[in-house]
Image (cartoon, rainbow over all chains, first blue to last red; front, side, top):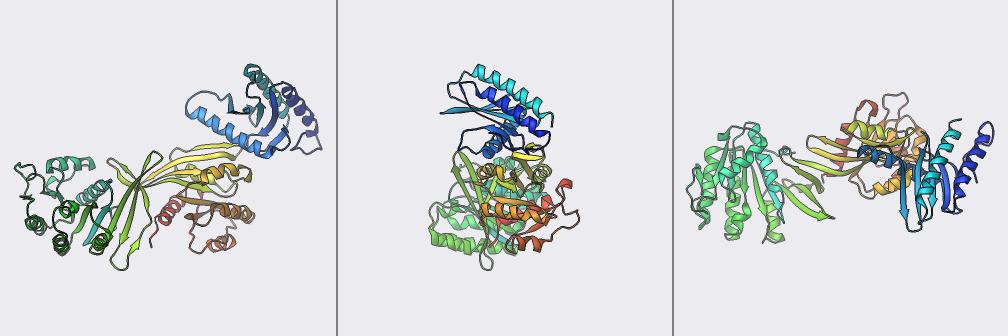
Length: 134
Length: 372
């Protein structure tokens, strides 16, 4: 399911590319859901379970990443890598995907984090490249 | 703060629990000393030498301007070097005679009695009230402002009312511990005609600087693109903003310290999609600076939505921002179109240049402090 696009013009091609990038991440057994949002909190595309509100997810994760980046900077901890919200039934991992977007991934609580983080990093780079075209 | 009391007058510094009211009284004296006044401090708790040392933290002043009535030496059976000395605590009248003599003799501009409960706890009530009234008369005839410190242990509501009635002002202090934070409050009441009172004003105490009004949370909110973040950044020396692509995605935070006023300022996002953040910060606040782009009528819809979430109880000031641009709505139009009461202040601002912001904050402070 892809949303947030005007389906005419050159943007139409990007839709498919984003879907492919998200699906390759979603294929991991530990990954439950994926979303791409703008840094200012608007949803670009998502593979979220039915019943969740993609707009809300985008806004919340934009706030999370924005705040985390400022925390990293204010506490002099170097470059922000990702923010991980650990909950009973899963972890929400939000990371930057270029200057203007961020990638949100929801994984199982007992996920293989090494593999997950590596895949997220790769997917984030793909998203960055795809979105740099517009 | 500290000024604003008519001369001559009497002020009751009242509290039910030990609080920082003595610091306030010291500040009151220090202000007088700096203005070249002679001040008299009647102290039953501290030796004059110790008190003098305590006063030095406020800076230098001519030592001979600060006079003491020494109420401690006789308690410790040691000789005193002060001009005015209480010689014994067995009988009440000679103590009051000494104080009155000092007042008549030195004609101080400001007097502090530290404290009245020391006497009230030891001597019969009627006598204390009688001489108290008499002392006020003597002090007023010399043109002084008198502060009576009073920590209430034993008096009931009726006696407290009588104390209020016989003084011009009451400064009532309160301290409470909430979730590990000690919060100080002050309420000022004016009894001269009908009693007028401020709300409970949150305070902070700092050495040297003394006392300032302290608002732990002022919310800066309003529709998107109105200039909320700019307001926070221009008001505060070093503000933190969590913004992306020109939109605040989490919050702005900063701290203001101007003379007599200290506040933590939180700016919220304006977009509806960040309302969850707004809810977090809107749970507890002292007051709201509502920023509005005064040139954009279409923003009024969103403005009304936000006002509805804030509710009508919270002290509010509207900052009509971008006032330097053409086509701005005036204060009356803004109030009527937002269905705000005519008493809600609207301050014209140009946030990007910092114009009107301090005025807006001061007006808000007045709204919060209130006076009925």
